[in-house]
Length: 301
Image (cartoon, one colour):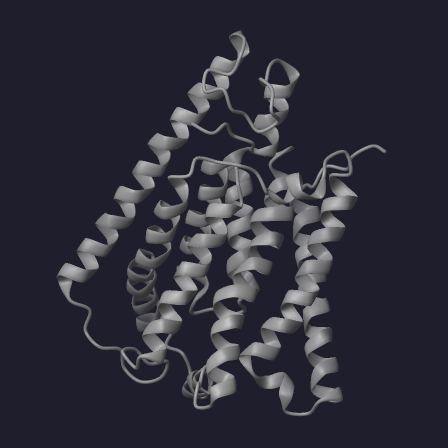
């Protein structure tokens, strides 16, 4: 069966379809179980169901010549990317917070919206203390990554440059959260994680970074060190500057590691893989090397 390129327009239309489907699920849930559809856990569950359906359909409709797992980015990559992704996910809270405070100076969040957010994130019972972290740290990041850095990125990268793919996926990721005040902070976060998908060739580090980012926020919220409503406390200069510099340092380290992987991949053109390991179990040469680049595959160093 002939593959259908996932263009920018097609990705946007699929995103709109996923958003509409999620809203339909939320509406159906609120009708069938009144009051249950307003919490964070139920909203994430509805969104996850819609995103999983669309991710699978996109993978099979546009990339029918490849296994679904390969389209979604389930590939081996250098083990060092995983701890780096974990640290970067936590530290990204600092630039996201700084940018969020800057945006709020010009477009403050309305009090009723802040009250609604606080209500959704309230963990005042045993059940909510379990469901909210599970939804925010596990279910949400996994499903969002499968759609954005999985199906969308994997499909678009085969017919678009890395820059265009990262830009479009990041914009869609930020728009998915339906918050004007959070759009630019989420755009930066989405951009870094999308770049990570390009640099590592795998969705694994993206999943870890996303879960770490959300997990850090939920932990701080659960400990009472930060709040959703009210004026935020002053962020110490050493934390602000140190956090940003640490993020930059980790990105540089990942870029260097990624370049080493590129060098190993190019070296494979001359014969056996110099590392003795590659994603397919054999050396990537000629057309297979081109295909590996288009699908974002990388060798293990």
